[in-house]
Length: 212
Image (cartoon, rainbow, N blue to C red; front, side, top):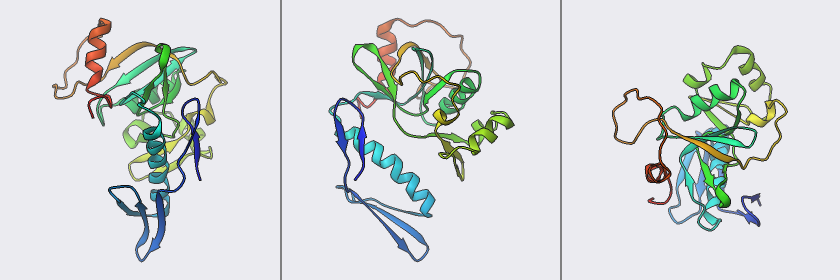
């Protein structure tokens, strides 16, 4: 049984998957309605299971609105980096982390009551291109942590394991929302300009679970 705390009450994610050795590796079967089958090495499938368990937990939390975004913070002030897959969220978040920001999440940001946001409680996934931007000493520190795991396209890790003493709560107040790349838009450079609240809200809907 796996019990996670995503809100005021624990969420029980008992059962749901079967992990079995097969001739050419391992097989992970999701016992849900779609009964999806994943095949690969044991390390690959355990990582997959980690992400699936987190996703299932939040599906059982009543209507948690979230954005496909990264979240960094200094103190109680957060910056939300919004964008589609491979738009550079993790890369920019990792660069800011190395520059002294706190890296909370690289892929999903949960919208909480009273205007606060938090990250999804799972390891950060960084592709090779983003990892190459980190200094050698920073990467060596990452590799020395218990959560670090190499992947074919990069690595995963938990940034809290090499934090600089910032132990403030993960829930922060969003002070800025940065859109790295609009869906369907051309890749062009634009100056950073302030957005009205309504404009930021409607721009973020395309990156949320509200319309999925």
